[in-house]
Image (cartoon, rainbow, N blue to C red):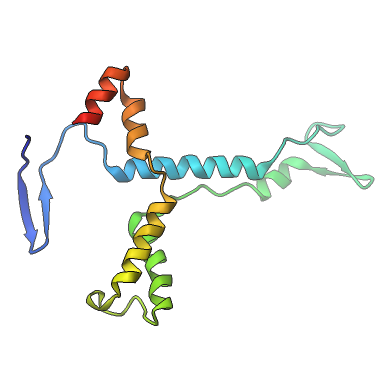
Length: 151
């Protein structure tokens, strides 16, 4: 069994000892979000168009237009992954509204059912094998993956 030093910073919070070569769970989650955003953008872009008669121009209704200018105008903005707290607040906000409350309601008064529903909603939106896939891709071979799984 391994133990770690914890420095208390409050009655319910503390700092855990730094672990070398550790990857924060949010990093894995953010990488998944970025992959999903890239896949969605690629799917939304659809199949590439056939080239026009002149490089960078297309015929449309008897006239030509500059395709590069159109692409720049509708180029997708860089994806910014929402933080877990933002996702939680967005989900709990609708659950609280359903219960007739707002985010300004003290947390001690939030209904347990709203919190449970929010957790289930966030779990459902996250891939079930995110950590397992990371362990698999970071392993050299199957025996190493199995050892990492068993720890």
